Length: 182
Image (cartoon, rainbow, N blue to C red; front, side, top):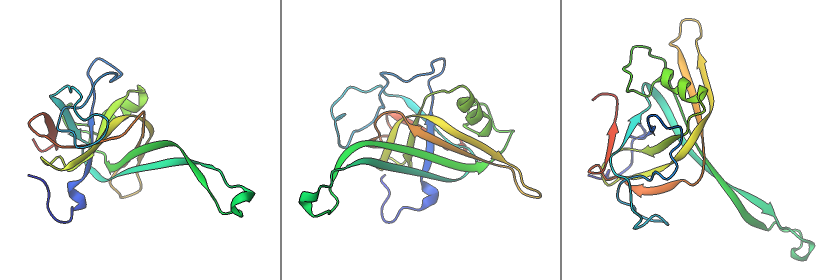
């Protein structure tokens, strides 16, 4: 059932899906019910599984658009712009925990994805049926681990989108979301 009212930040997270044995997701599309956009009515590959980044303490989604300055003397110096390209990114911070299982997207597997320059499919969602999901393919562009004196060791990971970001509705009949408590 879709979330009602204000969305608690603990409900949102960065989820990862990788294709085993293949470093790209070319041609692979997300299963589910599409709400808007050019993918409406397209055929989909159902059964995709997303794994919540384990031990995450925060996450974020960011989108931006490039602009071209088209200001001229004809408009008295008032700025005019033309819309250009766009980009998107997601990031997560969390606690390092070495004893998590092999199917969990933890700090160790994030390091491996970064080190292998592996393309992944990311999702920003609550994973609740009927809620929105933003998803797209990305690469890890930054990975960091920190260990201060008398602190819990942490990681920070940044993903940069490779191509479009898509908005859809979560359909848990066609998608699986694991929150590391399963």
